[in-house]
Length: 274
Picture 1 (tube, rainbow, N blue to C red):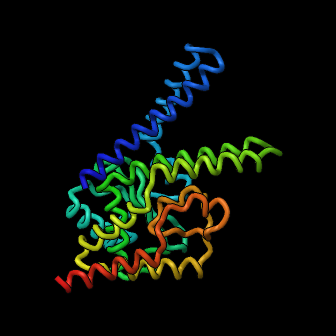
Picture 2: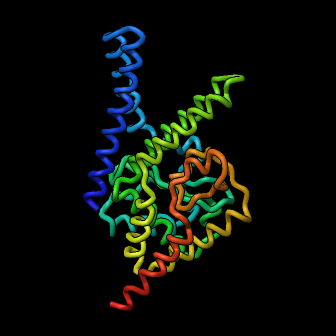
């Protein structure tokens, strides 16, 4: 787990260096050393802003509001208990007034994260299934996946939305910026992070079946409840809620759901065999 956290911190620094270098190169082309220095400084300043406030930006983008304890006391107690097992500070809780069941974490790591759940998730899952999903999301906090996910999604959202300034060139810009955004996302986020979070969640809950059953239920919900959101936010969710087509397919980072469920079921079989 410490290795995963260190690797994610390294990815963050590498991303900052790449963006600062690209901006410096652009500044050099425009006006030599002075512009290069200014552009690099602005890039680093923007990176610091994303680090400090990126979670709030994404929560606002996705329509999350602060959670009130009276809404669902079980949610707060479950998150606190799982956080204690993971030795992390309990994240701030947010609720999304949406019938589509989903959950995600954003933030910086074990001491600065926010967990958002939809009203649809709270209503659709049984207690054991909810615990499995929450454990999965908090596992991303423990490994600092949350830091890289937050920054990768903000970068992808910014690049894709940048195409809107093109007017009649919007489609052409999107054709260029969309693959660039997807390349950054896939460079920073491996599907293995989801499998690792699944395994840790199963260990925390004492059984893999709660999370496995929740994944099945979330997959069924995607066929019954309509869902709309920015396609670049795909890496945040427990499962991929988007139809795998167009830009959403290009950015998708989750491993096949059937594989995740099979691996989770296999954990129970393996423990019995030993």
